[in-house]
Image (cartoon, rainbow, N blue to C red; front, side, top):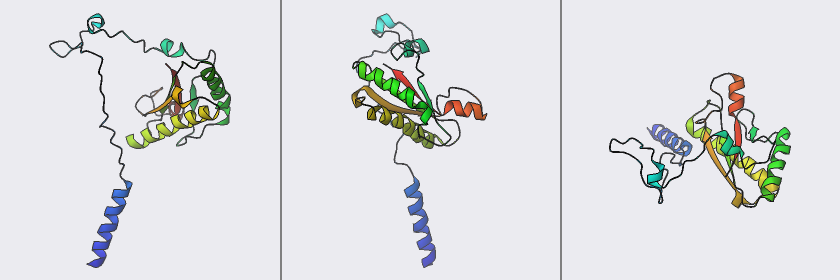
Length: 178
């Protein structure tokens, strides 16, 4: 009987120790400035003039407008790794020079993973990849106020598919300028 109680307590402690305290679904979002453009049926009326909210270009051309010309914005990683490979050091150095010369520019570093693994694990790995790039830029003199690191995990793949080539293209950190 004593062995069963001890075993039950040990198993409960292990399960509690392995659980994540991160509440991924409890993200506080507060928009103090926007007004709703939802119609009576709940559909978006699309009238931006009425709401006072301007349209945003989410295409690649809008994202590329502010960064260094002729320099890639993607750092690729090995499987289950957040170590920056030596071949991406010159890319990071070019972005750091651009950011130090443009004090008003900010960069969002987006961490991504392939579709293998659980949601929480991939969000954590994507964050580690984004933070690795952010730390590299900081070591080269870019102020923290110009950078933000976020993770999308496996939620925004660059390429669909389950081939090794598709997985390799999804294991990345993207630099997006604001």
